[in-house]
Image 1: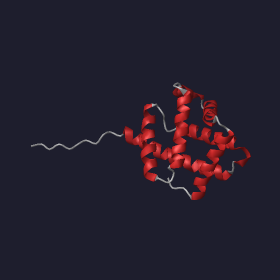
Image 2 (image 1 turned 135 degrees about the horizontal axis):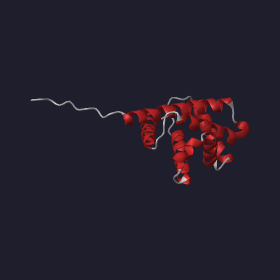
Image 3 (image 1 turned 180 degrees about the horizontal axis):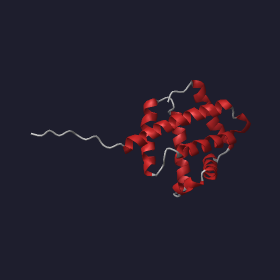
Image 4 (image 1 turned 30 degrees about the vertical axis):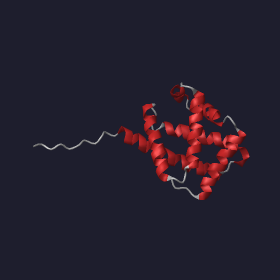
Length: 150
């Protein structure tokens, strides 16, 4: 993921601001997601608090490693591969992304700008690309080893 220093700063600052203004940011995200896409709610039946903590941790980790392309590719690729097993389809990423950006914008209030929206949109698109690549790789058939006949 190649982002400008300014975009990285916008991402980090807006996330910190959002968490500061909305301590229950991730829970609010899930409320917004399920209001927009109620068909996704059954996928989140297990411990919602644990899922919220995993999502928060994933967002923090991505922001902490945003300049480390190999880490992002490996980590987000593996995450995308795991999401295949949860039944996640490529179309579902759009619902999640729109709910995430809307939740961040709501939490940041008047301090949210079009530059924040653009930075988050670009970052989320890159995250999805890496996750979908991991999902594709996980679903690809294993290469067959050639056998020699004697």
